[in-house]
Length: 388
View 1 (spheres, one colour):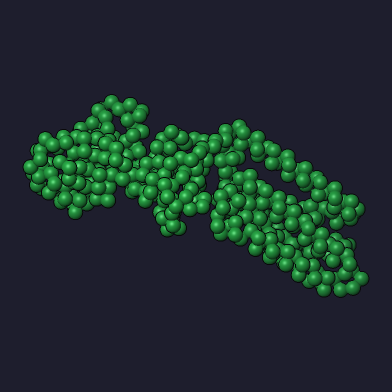
View 2 (cartoon, rainbow, N blue to C red):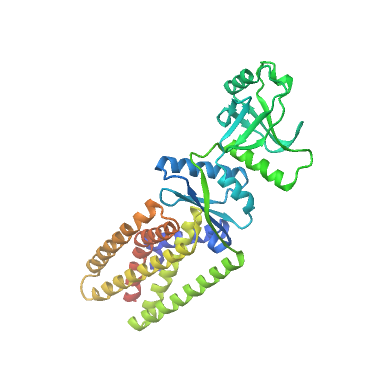
């Protein structure tokens, strides 16, 4: 068929095939509102600058990654809130402790600071040590030297270990560590050789805080909202049904408008192909689809159908004149409409306003792929159909 040799149609087919392969082999990720999970909103003690908010995000991300949670989404909301989305499988109680720990660590001997969290160069995962269950770590040379100076001759004194001004451990300083020499290896003991679940959680909170460093400000949980996997599945099912009804409604309107299946089918097939392209793009960049993203897909496809109607009308009107000139006029209208849509979405995307960012990304992606891939191909398809 001559149509299948057209470069614009070939590009559309190749992109659809690539999207199908991405969806099949890489899959599509869903946000917590569709897959189940919790959204935790943290309130910072004071308003933060952009760089401070970036630091907070990096530290919180590091803490969650340290605890095996790489599949999380963290983003700022304004200058004093941080939103964290965690999957259903996460231990919510432990995560709450990890997130709200500022992580300011200090060791005191005889009312003198022996070392702080900034003097720690390496932290071991919690486990059984010579003195019980706890967290082993190593000091920097400067930190170990300061510890040696402060601890010298104070064997038998308690080493008071504070985390966020709370005393977490106070082991007795052995005479061996008070000899004035450098001892880089240290231990925070939280329990004996048979720790409870709370002791283990506490050790992991300490380990995480030492590993990631301290937050520049204190944070507290403002609120937590959770969605069960069952409810998430219902949302997905509802979205699919709503999309199906929307597709049927569009088909009915277009059928009433043109009363010709040879015109209606290409419009509907092209619209469906744009859904595949957007889903393939989401899979490629590992974007988690949420309800706002699905709304963005529907908006992008709706815009695409509008543009296809413009192309179709201009093609029909240009049959007796010059089709090329009519198509150019149609694309002038389409590019103008696409530019205004993208301009309207850019503030949501750049400012990253919570879940609305998903709406902006899918809408912009859909419009860009539409004007660069599917609509040029559709113009060739509809010209071919009307000629034959």
